[in-house]
Length: 170
Image 1: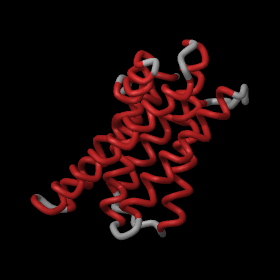
Image 2 (image 1 turned 180 degrees about the vertical axis):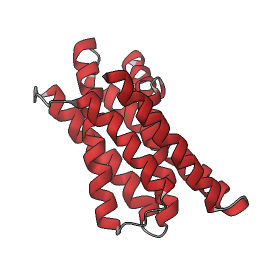
Image 3 (image 1 turned 90 degrees about the horizontal axis):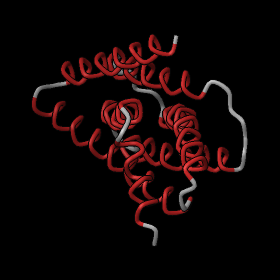
Image 4 (image 1 turned 90 degrees about the vertical axis):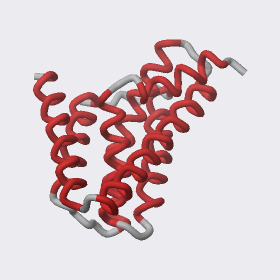
């Protein structure tokens, strides 16, 4: 096992605010929706991030990956801030759409770094799931102890982070 590839895969999502904010936001938004969204939306994200990864390593050119990632943070933050309770299927589609771009970024980095792609994919999948879990736990703690108002304010902070990232791209 090439532990450097596995570690690189784990570190990619943990090393960038864009990935951290988006993945934690999926967990936070899932808490607002409740029910099956608690596991369906994170699972949809992890599954589709792998599809985006595969697309990148197979050479599929996807335009505007970085703007899509920054926009995903803004949109997810707004969904949390406005406590949008989307149907489970729609939330899964939204999570999957955003995940594809995040996965493509992972794949592009992995391909250019020449790492073991399987190990790298395992690493970033585990880190992605852990960040979703952190978002779920934080969201449940906030909503149960302080209330939904603070959870929604957290969404506002996520959205502000997305706006800052969009501004840095211009």
